[in-house]
Amino acid sequence: MNLLARRPPSWLLILTDTVVAVLLALASTASAPELSTNAGTTVLCWLLAVPVAVRRVWPEPAYYGALLIGLAVLALQANRLLPTAVAALALYPVATARPVRRSAIALVSGLLVNGSSLLVSISGAPRYANGWPDPVFIVGTAWLVMGTSWSLGTAARTRREFAAGEARRRAEQAAADERLRIARELHDVVAHSMSVITVKAGVAAKVLDKHPEEGRKALRAIEEIGRGSLAEMRHLLGVLRQPGSTPGSAPLPRLADLPSLARQAAEAGVRVDLSVDETVPDSMAPAVYRILQEAITNVVKHAAPAHCRASVAVADGRLRISVVDDGPGQRVLPGRPGGHGLAGMRERTLLYGGTFEAGPLPGTGFGVHASWEIP
Image 1 (cartoon, rainbow, N blue to C red):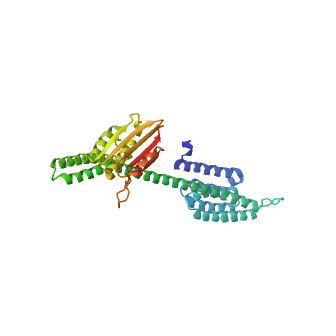
Image 2: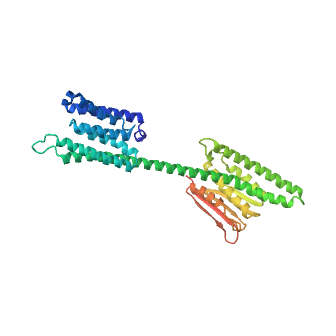
Image 3: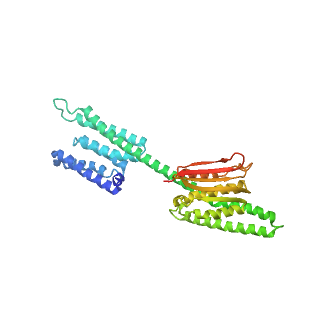
């Protein structure tokens, strides 16, 4: 089916047109044996078939050439069918390759030239007792053939433009999705480490003079977290620079990395009680890790010092993530705009067709809950 839907190569189309042109010329001479006695008329009929062979290479010159040669053929009353057939075939690529207004002008020009030359040809021909040939019928049929060819070509052009527009739309959507994935990955890499670094830097600034050892410990933690974050960012950017790569090509976080995440949060003043079900599918581990990372990062940024309970459970074919803390319920600092953390967690949950809820708890604290069906 794909082979049938694919457009044939240009050389094959031109070869087909050449074969059709030869067949038309042979048919025109075979249908009127008297033409063989007139070499000039025969050459003219064969020459009229040439525009069919070159109609895809030079659409408009081939079409207007067909009209002029057809005018000469009709003036000599050599053949009344061939000029209309050639003009209709030559009009099709004009309609497919040129704007509608331009091809419509070509259609009107062809109707006028072909119709008037047919009338002149019929008026000079002998008429039968029943009045045949009927000028109105012949001209009307010729115009119908040319109008049909133009309509088919215009429809093909419209379908082609629609398909091209759909391809552009899909490419733009893919680019937008790619930008969103890159932004989400960079946010996940940077947000947690920078939050912990900010907290530890504040601690170091306060205790460095009175408690140098605590200050140096905080600075060593900053160095360790910074090095790890830079290494992850460097690898991510290196993957993105490779042709055909995506953020998904970077090493994926694992659930085994969650204890390290909890230790970093503890160094920033947030004690995390972590509970992870070992039956979580490996394919969902990166999303689970990123959601927990962002939720704990929000606790560090907006609620430290605090106590946080983070759990990942699988029950009844559904995966559930819960992160609840006992800090202030507000997750946006006064006077500052909200970030992208909650939006990123919601996006990751929706990728699995799940549900996401986040908000202040009754009394005090803040909760993040995400869940989705496991295929």
